[in-house]
Each structure stands twice: as structure tokens, then as C-alpha cells.
Amino acid sequence: MQSILKANGFDVLRHILKLVMGSVQKYRVFARRRTVAAIWLTVIGLLVLISVAAPLAAPHDPYKPDFKKVTVGPNIDNWFGTDFLGRDQVSRIVYGGRTSLFIGFVSVFLGIGIGSLWGMVSGYLGGKFDLVSQRILEILMAIPGLILAMILMFILGASVWTLIVAIAFTRLAFGARVIRAVSLSVREMAYVEAARSIGAPSWRVMAFHVAPQTFAPFLVLVTTNIGIAILIEASLGFIGLGIAPPTPTWGSMLGVAASNLEPFWWLVFFPGLFITVAVLAFNLAGDGLQDVLDPRSRGSLG
Amino acid sequence: MTRLLIAIPTIFGVTVIIFLIMRALPGDPLSVFYDPSQIVIMSDRERASIMADLGLDRPLVVQYSVWAGNALTGDLGTSFLRGDAISETIRRRGAISAEIGILSILIAWLLGLPVGILSAMRPNSFADGVASLFTVLFLAIPGFWLGLLIVLGLIHGWSYHPPIISSQIWQDPWANLQIVAGPALVLGLAQAAFVARMARSSLFEVFREDYVRTARAKGMRESVVLFRHALPNALLPVITLSGVLLGFALGGSVTVERAFGTPGLGNTLISGAIDRDTTMVQSIVLVYSMVFIGMNLLVDLSYSWIDPRIRLG
Image (tube, rainbow over all chains, first blue to last red; front, top):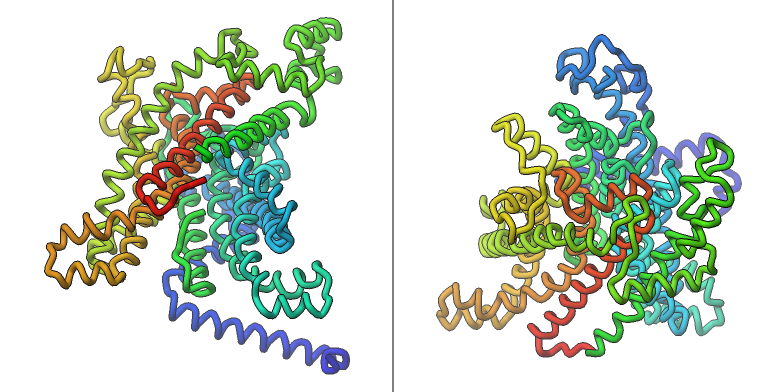
């Protein structure tokens, strides 16, 4: 405590440097033990980097039509060809990834986060609250995720935030279910019992003793669910319930390409390829994380 | 039996949720056609009379009970836009979707199970590597993209397109098969990947059990060990998880049908959503949820039938 209070700028810098070096070291150990997961984690990193630096990464303006080259196949100037308005596909995929990944990350953190909190409280408190929330979760899970997201989008109307809310809503139950199970088992542990017996209130026990235990499964849940969220977003975009046209997402690019009578292969192939790679990356990184953080359980899709 | 009773509140809850989402969120079903700030399509009086016709002026609870009561008797009302009975449309379109679903499940188990068994028996072999590569790949590939690629390939390679006019299996089996084959294959492959992966990990676990070692030590043939001893136990978790799988398949079938242009229920749902045909969307979502609940019930029941130790309820 004291060192932090007295620390000057240089100390803080050194501390941060140490942290970074430490995590690099940890990552190298991780990479040696779980090569596949590490490779895909790097792929995720690259995708995120490209999305964040979209204005730098995109070779052309993704919104500017060029009627001199409408639906031109892949060539040196436009690697992935151009679309019906002559817009460059590489740039649109870069910007589309920005939207798709943003929606994936935010919706999953929101959905799984709230769901996990709910599950933790419900598992720890038990009793009537748990019973009622179990029934509600069962009902939520009885509607297939994509279809639930579909009707929500149908009613809420298309925008980035309604999309995030719709996808987050479908993820609630998945977060709550897993974390509730963790919370149930942690509740019975001796140290939690001890905390309770010295008179700590429920919220305190949950915040300081139960919550840390749920962090590892939470991380795994988030990673695997981002893949699913990207798939849902792509599906919604594909069927025309995603974000309105000028903003590209991978799904809506596919939808527009497919609605044309004669689809051009490069308009279909490349956006789908990026969806697949992104989903693959999150799935495999999630599996790797699960193996490292919780070696007992088998990888499963949930 | 008790399991069936437990499903009833779930079904009730699902209908309430669907109803609430469709009605209580901003705007009523007519707001799409009626927007005072823009061009007035309907006058206030016209609107009120249509609302009364559809029973939309009554309180929500009454509306819900009328809708749910009618749905129980199989009457889902008439389409908002077309005016024909929804239950008739669902029966016609649903037959094709059901066919696709059953065929895809068949493909999933016939393809996924052998692959899973093979890779569990020779772990880390070349065949196992190829198998796991494909399972991982097919779990990530969006079904509708694969569908689009297949359609594209058929058009460009053979200038072939499946028949556009929908036909039921009892009318024209050959035309029907051409419509159904593509979506069933795409959906089946994704599910097969799931089944193969689950079967592999579950068999792998069972192979390490003592009773399997005993069976092998007795000099039993490997096929007997596998099919009589290991497989029945290994299948249990696979079957349990197939409930989750069904959710993916049901949702996925909507977009896959779109990709192939299949005249099934999923495609009707999408056109309903685009046309803002509220009653149609509501009914089809209800059908999908009921199918999902029913299938999960079936999974639960078959679970206790396969494993007599588990008696549910």
C-alpha cells in the first residue's frame, strides 16, 4: 500500500513494464503448452488490431461508389473485387469487421456479464429466488437463440444498439446457467462458510469470496460466446434484420450479395471467409482457455 | 409423465414472452402502416375500426387469452397482409422444413457417429487429425454461407438450379428431393461435426474405464467391446447435448433455407419479418419454440429410456 502511495511516475512506469514483461512471459509459456489456442488467440488479436485501425488498414473508402468499376473481380487494386456500387471489398470487410467484432464483444460482455451476475446471486442465495429464476431461464432457453434475436430485432428496429441488446438477451441464460453451477459448489466450501460465520453480509461474501472463483469460467464463456454472437449477428445481417445498408457488416454484405439474381462469387466468398475465421478463432481460443483454466472439464459447445 | 407436466409451465411462459415481445414493445402491429408524422396511410377512424376488427383495442390480458386459446385449437388467425389462414401456410411450408430437419438429423448421426468412433479408437492418428480438422471447421462455418457457396457452385459449374415451384414428397418425390437435399446436407454436416466431437471425447473417457479394460482382457473382439460395452455408455452425454444442438439447428435452418431459397417455414418467417406481417411472425416463432420444447422433451425421455438408472420425475 505504502509504496503505491509514495510512487512517482518512474515507479509506475517500471511497474507497468514489469507487468507487461510478466504477461509476455506468461503468454510464451501458454504458447508452448497450447500452441493451437495461442495461434488462434493471435488471429483474434490481428482481427481486433485491423478493426481498431480500420481507417489506416483499409486501402480505399468503403462508402465511396465508383461506377467505372462495378462488380469487378479480384485484381491487384481491389484484392477481393468490388461490389454492385464499385466499392472496394477489402475496405468494406475491414470496416465490416469493425462493426461485427464490436457488436460481438459488447453484446457478449453485456449478456454474459448480466447473466453471470444473475446466476451467481441465484446460486448463492438459493431458495425462492433461485427457483423463480431457474424457471425464467428455462423459458428463455426454450426459444432458439437466433429466433429470439430475430423477433427482438423485428420489434426494436435496426441499429447497432438494438442489435447488441437483442444478442445480449439471447446470451443471458447461458451465462447464468454455468455461473450458477459454479456458485452452488463454491457456496459449500469451507472458506465461504467461514466468511459467513464471522458475520459477513451476503453481498460481501459474494463480491469477495464467490465472484473471484467465477472469473475463469466467465472468461471461457465470454470467449466461446463471442463466436456464437458473431454468427448470430451475421445471420441477422444476412436475412436483412441487421444494421441498415450504408454501414457494412460481414453478415449484411453476404445478404446483399445473395439477394442479387446472379451472385458474384467474390462477394459471397470473402465476407463468409472472415466470419468463419473469426468464429473459428474464438471457438478454438475458448477451448484452449478452458483446458488451461479448468483442466477437469471437457470442451463443449454451449 | 411428470416430465410432461413440467413442460406445461414452460410452454405457457414461452407463449407469454412471445406475446409480450410482439405486443408490449413500442408500437402496435398497425404502427408500421400508420405514422402521423409522415404520409398518412390510414385515418384515425379507419385505424380505430381496424384495431377493433382485430381485437387490438382490448386489454393485453384479453388479447393474450384469445390468441393462446385459439392457438390451442390450432387456429392461428389470418395473415396480416395476405388474408389467408396462417395454420394452412404453416402446414404446407412446415412439411418441407420438417423433412429437412429429419433428414439432417439422419445425416448427422450416420456421418458423425462413425467418424467420432473412428477417431476415438485411433487417437492422434492421421485419420483422427483429419476428422478433428473437419469437425472444428464445420462447427465454425456459417450454414448459410456454405449453402450460398453450394448454390453458386451449382449455377456456375453445371448451370443447375433446384426447382423453384415447391412440391411435397407425396406429389413429386424427385422434385421434392432436389429442394430438400441441399439444406439437409448443410445442416446435417454442422450437426455431424458436433456429434462426432462429442462422441469422440465421450468414448475416449469410457475407453479408460475398468470394465472396458476387463472386457478387452477377456479377449473379446474389439467390435463387441465397442458396441456392447463402450458405446451405450458413451452415447448418454452425446444424447443429452443434442438438445443444445437442436437449438442451433432450428435457428440455423432459418438462414440456410434463405440461402437455398427453400420454400420452407424459415423462409416464410423471414419474408414475414420483412413484410412486417406481425401475426405471421408471431405464429411461426411459436411453432419453432413448440418444436424445440417438444424435441427437448423427447431427448429427456429417450435419455431415461436408454439409461434405466435415471428415472425422471
